[in-house]
Image 1 (cartoon, rainbow, N blue to C red):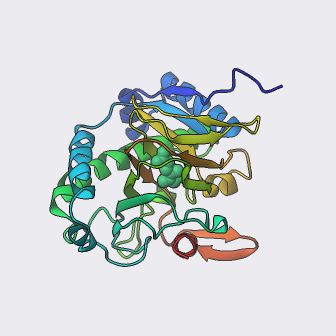
Image 2: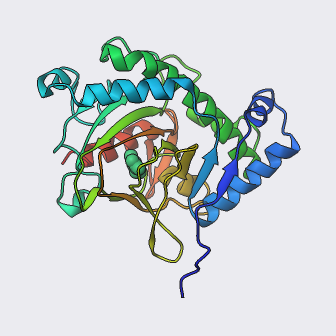
Length: 293
Ligand SMILES: O=C(O)CCC(=O)C(=O)O
Ligand SMILES: [Fe+2]
């Protein structure tokens, strides 16, 4: 029988824990949070993380609502290439298919910021809250990476060295996406695992996200009070399966905007995939290209 208590765990992450980690200090609260993260990623691959929402989030959501309802020709000015291109920008409905095997396009349009240093080409109303929110999420990424180092008994900076480049011609693996789901029934965003390290998702209050539980059932996971954080495929690889990259999807319903922030290794980081050594940048591009086919 399914375990009725199966539920994605809640982790309370105090900003003071993050600032201590930033200063190289692992407090008792830090150790507790690291342990909770380890348990959540090991069993569910997902956690609900209570952490203050930055002020820039509400500005970003307001700007996004008006952007996505502006004329299609206006939105199309900010398409700079296929979904996943280096410059980010707008992708209209009918392009993306996160589960290419399904043969179905997702019922979404989205806007992506991929590089925190180059925002000049972006839609002006989105760019200003976008830059601010990107910075806030980069700090939260640092905190989650430090907690991961503690959880996995590695030097505190280990995963931040994986994510944040030290050389100017390297790229970070961070991307901010604003997703606008069409109000339709049925699955709106296909079953998939995330490609990289953590996804830090603002779900809003509207249900939609469904996560596969250890008992095999899909469960609704909405957490408007904070963030839903999950481990992607790189984490499963790096930890040799100690952390799980878990299947999820988005079910139908009313109009919904969510804001995932994807984190991952910097572009030059070397990864071994099926016996082949590739850079994380190359590997990510292959996965993104597939979702346009
Ligand atoms: O919007 C959501 O609730 C989930 C989105 C998601 O899974 C993704 O963008 O990878
Ligand atoms: Fe996802």
